[in-house]
Amino acid sequence: MKIGLHIVTWDWPGGARSIGPTLAAIGDAAETAGLTDISVMDHWFQMDALAPATEPMMEGYTTLGFLAAHTETIRLGLLVTGVTYRYPGLLAKTVATLDVLSGGRGQLGIGAAWYQREHEGLGVPFPPTAERFEILEEALHVCFRMWSDEDGPYATKHFTLAETICNPHPISSPRIPVMIGGSGERKTLRLVAKYADACNLFATGLDEVAHKLDVLRGHCDTEGRDYDTITKTMLSRTDSADIDAVVDEMRDFAKLGIDKVIFVPSGDPIAFTQRLGGELAARLEEL
Image (cartoon, rainbow, N blue to C red; front, side, top):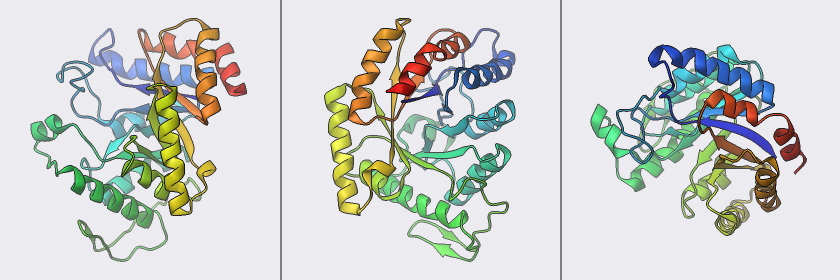
C-alpha cells in the first residue's frame, strides 16, 4: 500500500507569508518520507463543513506549480478539480503545463463539483447535478483530445472548440493519469470504469468501502474494463502515533484492494508528514 498526502487547510502559524515556505517544507518532508503523491483541494473558499468559508484557501493549480518547483519525484494533482471551475480546453492546457514543468508528474483529478456557495460567491455558473455530470464526461473527452495529436475542431453538447492545440504535449505517457473522485454508484463509479486510471473513496468503514468496490467491479464488467487496471485510493485521517494500530487498520483495507491511502494532516503538517515515513511507510508498503 502506497501513501499520499492531501492538504486541506492553510491557516498555518505566521499567516500568508508562511504558506510558501511551509508548503515547500511539506514537499521536502513528503519525498524524504517516501510518499508517492501530494494533492490539494480545488476550492476558492474553505469548505463550510471543515471551517469558516473565510479561512485561507489557495488556488489549486498555482499551488501545484509551486510544489513542482520544490519537489523532484512526487506526483501532483488536485483532489479533485471541480469540472465547473474551468472550461475543459483550458483545464487540459493547465494540467499539461503542470505535467511538463514537473517532468511528467502531473495528474488530472476531476469530479462533478458540489460547493454551490463559492460558485455563487464568485459569479460562476452552477448547473444542476445532471448537467454537471454531462459536462464532466464531455470534459474528459476534451482533455483526451487536447492531449492527442489531433488539433482540429472538436465539439460536444456543451462545448465547441475550433482548434484543439496543446503544445507542448504532456510528458506523461501514454497520457496524464486521470482520477475521478467520488463514490456515487450510478454515475461517478461508472465514469471511473469507463475513463479513469484511479478512483478515490472515503474511509467510511470496511463494509462501505467493500460495497463501493463491488459496484465499481460491476461497472467494469459492463464497460469491458479490467478492474485491476484501476488504482483504488482512499482518503483517510489518523491522529494516532501508534504505528501498529494504523497498520492493522490499513491491512483490512488493503485486503479489500485499496492500493493507496491518502492521509489528511492533523496538527503541524510538516511533523505529520515526517511521521508518515520510516517504519509506517515501510510496513504499509508490505501490505
